[in-house]
Length: 512
Image (tube, rainbow, N blue to C red; front, side, top):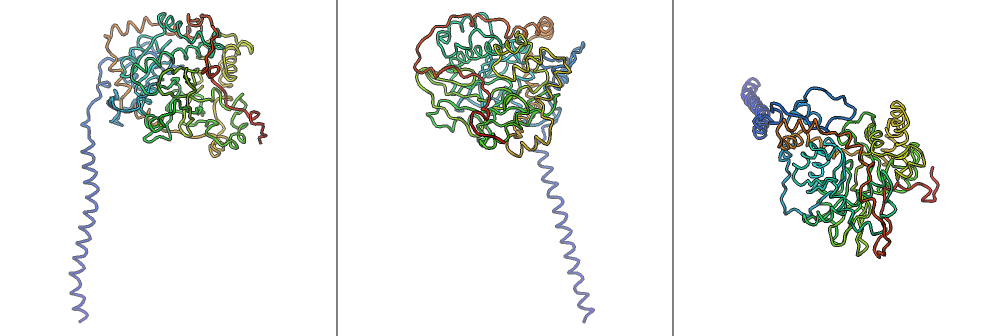
């Protein structure tokens, strides 16, 4: 009986084994089949990017890395693409339509006004990053390198970008502004360097208000091209959604600024190489701010190297006017203002060692303690100008490493844990995605409206260095007008300049 029982169970065991083999085979083939179909669905056919296959392309001036040695031979497309960081492999295909035609029905419509002398390497990522997060229109008042024929030709080719040149006609038009007959900006008149730039920015903002109304904009923001909006609290990381969610009676929104903290002295592209930022006082508990103040300043004059009072967005409405580069105001009422609790403006300041000399070259001020007070509003800018004007390059680099570069990893980690410093990667990822998907290469390709011979001729005849040196040195006609005192019931006081964050003495509280 025992033998019979054993013999009858053997076929049953064999059938179980066959079933197990089938199940194992099914589990093996199923994920392979799914992966195969996914590959078929995502395959783009191996199309060749026309930019990479162009027979004899060129590189635009203003895109070379600072400090790099110029080459005598003509640059290839791969050089131009590499400068803007484009990868050979396709990524983020939804960025391929670099026109960003999202439709005219999306509200609110947001515009940015900026006064810039930067090159394409900085301006292109800045523009398209803000396009990604919901900005539709840009009013660029250009000078220096940004106003050169080849750079401005690229900017003019971008949909939604309005390029305004600092011509004699523009200065004459701004010389008729009512601002010159009012007192709120008067204390910044007739002063060089940063003060002249501050007045120029304010006049440009005034013109941009009129242009934004004509363009049907709902909000206007003033930013420099070394600043990125960081709408961290908004759904879908959208500044449009952030402003759409505000109450209708809000007139102005303040974005507190975070300041970049570079960890190396050889940064080339700040937007994709800098991830550590120092938080604004407004986003910190007062105990944390005061308790870590001395550690955070690292021997510098203030908590931030430069300004700490943020930037603002204003709702387009009647009687709107600028109130300096950092705020907006209204001739007929005191605007209702709110300050955002999470969203910020990321300020990439002094991120490159070459920033020391470039700022020095734009100002004809004498490098003395008394003279720099007339030229610069903030203490660190004054100290940086003096060291850049009097020290050797080796001494400047040593000073830069000591005052700007965050090389103490133990201190960095401590301040990160205490919330003074923070890591922010989203802008870096967006800009890198734009590059890898060929957006910037597409812009350059579309800007080739001139023949190659005419283009090269315009490159050779352009004197970029002489244009750059004129910035901040030549007094414009607009700064030569007479000031008349008038009564303004809603003046809001003097225009708000760049201000340093508060110091412990402002709180009358002892710190550890």
